[in-house]
Length: 394
Image (cartoon, rainbow, N blue to C red; front, side, top):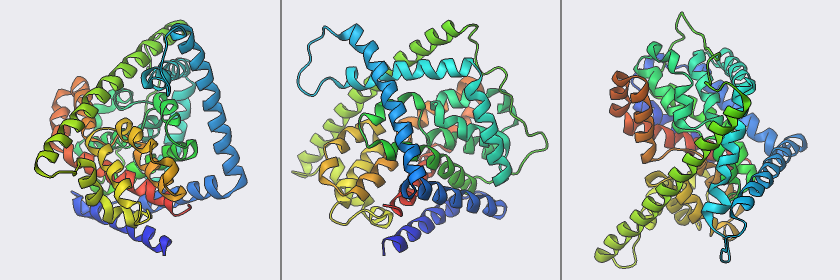
């Protein structure tokens, strides 16, 4: 029964994307089918085979070792600061972003990451029939944040029409940055965060390709020669650390603003309806799709409230809320919700992406602002799709 509900959820998600499509005749059904099969095979391999589980455990162990190294740096700077029981979120979680951003910057300077991303993107392009720029950007979005992923393809921006611009923007919103994965691993079960990275890449491409179909252009290439301006490994380390520090402060500022705003909204709601919160309203609103995704009816309201919180605020606010529920929910619900939360699909991302595109090409920023809500809906459908596929194997 759970498998039938999951299949129905996938049909519903793709059906909603089809209804939103602006060019139904040119949808690449073959490519979408291939990506869906790749999603299912990836999840099956990771969750049901010993080799797949060993890979996940190995990657998780690697991240945990990197977290240990990062904590050494944090403790050196803040070792004398007295903190209460439970620690301080900014110290224990957000400051790790600095170390992970430094590693990414060095790997980019050494041309290791750009080469990996280019070849994986090229392979995806050949298998699915999508243009190389869109495929490259989708893979790039696994490692870098929304702004950085789009900036990496700035030299190709003049080739992008409205549909292609939608796909690269959707990939950026539907993924997460590797620089903050370490922070996520401190809050959610590692296996679900890690499997969400490739699944979200495929989901974002699938949903975006249905909503905004594209054809491979005659000139289809990706240039990764000038992906960094760093002139030495030490400059890369310094710039990476500064960028990581900026991200940590931005996340902290957004958490303060969103959590405080959420409390304000709940206070206003309770003036009219005592005992009712925005989270509860969102929980009931998302309950139908939550049941289809495979969440138990007894847990779907709580799970829906977390998913809704992520959409209207950001993933960190929702993860903090979900952290308190982990021990009280089933393994399946924890897996589904964790995968859903591991993406940038929320209202604030619309502004981030529009602002980034404006800095690259002010004319195309107008298009992004015009399809902003469609972008959020598409990215949310992609998160639902990834979470549903995971639920089939839990």
